[in-house]
Amino acid sequence: MLIYQFIQKVKFFKILFFLIIILFPFQVFSSVNNECEKNISEIERQIDIPKGLLTAIGLTESGRYINKSKPIIWPWTINIKTKSLFFDNKKQMLKFLNSQIEEGNFDFDVGCMQVNLKWHGKYFKKISDSIDPKTNISYATSFLYKLKSDHKSWTEAIKRYHSSNPNKNVKYHKKVLANWKIQDKKTENLKISKINDDNLKLHVKNNQPKLYEKLEKIIFFRNIFMEKINN
Image 1 (spheres, rainbow, N blue to C red):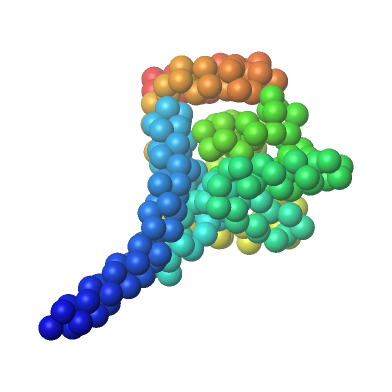
Image 2 (cartoon, rainbow, N blue to C red):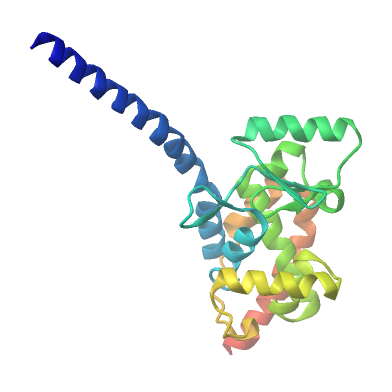
């Protein structure tokens, strides 16, 4: 009887150990995988951008399947030479970035919104800021809104967020719409929410000073636009 009970206990602990091995990584991923979505939701509440657009772009840029059912926006993503690399945490990703930069390579996309450091790296105080989810998303939002202001439509802004080359950006636009699940609607006609810039301005001022002056101008003209459509 005692031997039987001992065997049963061994079996129980084996099963328990197996479950811990299976479930613990998932819990680690779960604690991280909401960082992009959480910050995107916060920023979307503060700025006049179509609801869900940043999430759709994030999924297109750095979507990762942790399980087969649903992709998540993975904050520790680098795209280098059209290949996506997914790191487990910020420390691993930063170590790889620094090794690339030491070799003189800046041409890669980083973070939730895959900001290209070759073209946009100068707007961040330091490399680690560029992969911080909130800083990465706030810069991408400002850049996306500038594209909207320059080209007068969200469709063009989405395309040019990826590339100004039609051979590349048309396909990208379709992917974003697929992730947005609004293929049957025109992005230009989506309702935009009222502006609340204070929190975003403060974050950009503290983390991206070179962008701050430009952001002030964007907000100024955007407020004029909102006053016109509200009158």
